[in-house]
Image (tube, rainbow, N blue to C red; front, side):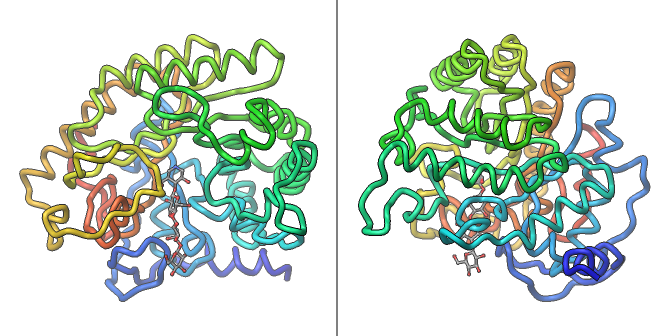
Length: 383
Ligand code: G3I
């Protein structure tokens, strides 16, 4: 049997196991038995079926079956998947001649066999891209032409591999600053601002039937919204295909003001492309006032206890606030269900969300709809 087929057979054939309850994002862990098979009609994907697809980010360990209970819950609850890390450049193409397709292949195969939408994440990003990508063999910065060639080779190899087997790609990720201007990165510095146009053009050539998206955080902000609209319209004016915009939605109990999110949904939809909520989670933890909320992963602050108030469980009052906040978010999303094609949570359960480690490592957060025991939170019934 082909190695990937074997992996899938092992993974997806397993029905009940054990799961980790620690806070690490991609580690196997201690054991707490459970996992009940959710009745089909009470799943998240059934609950929102008249509005949008409902998805999750899925880690390498989940895909490859190191965490079979997580995988079973993800399969039961969601109908669209995004690899959390395994298609990022540093993972899928760590060295010039080395590609690691193990987890991506398994996920693509699963999605295809089960007719699920898979969103590739991500082809061009300033982050999680090895330094060698931007340098020649002497360690000198590449020329514009050489970096464009490297971008093209990467996109052709990765997106080309899954050409007709992947639903969509986050082609460019997080290219904007908070004020809506273009972020300075090695991509923009060496190639120029048109690196985005080239990325979308190469993606279209490599996977002509895939939907092509721009994805970013804090897209509710009016200034950043203006930048994103300019980016979309620039591509459209040049006849370069862009099919959708992903609003990441790493929120908290008091941020953002949801009318801003709604205004952005309406404004993006007016350009004629799909709007998606791509990385939804709502942190219940205090956030250092000096820092920008969002998803800048270069932020890494030393752990302080006052920022980790619920290490032993979430008080019911705060859980109620979380339920209320989710209800408000979903009321807006459902109201605009005609514009929103997908809502994806960034992670399967609270046990392994990235929010436990950002902007400080080792906190205990509760940002998702599935708790550490892999059960749906009770407030889901109100959404
Ligand atoms: O797997 C290794 C582990 O073996 C090692 O011991 C450990 C030591 O630090 O690192 C582990 O890798 C970490 C990985 O997450 C898995 O936990 C990386 O250090 C860490 O950088 C990585 O963070 C990911 C982050 O993107 C950077 O790629 C998060 O899981 C992932 O949720 C996050 O996702 C991003 C989206 O792609 C884009 N939007 C923002 C979002 C949240 O930051």
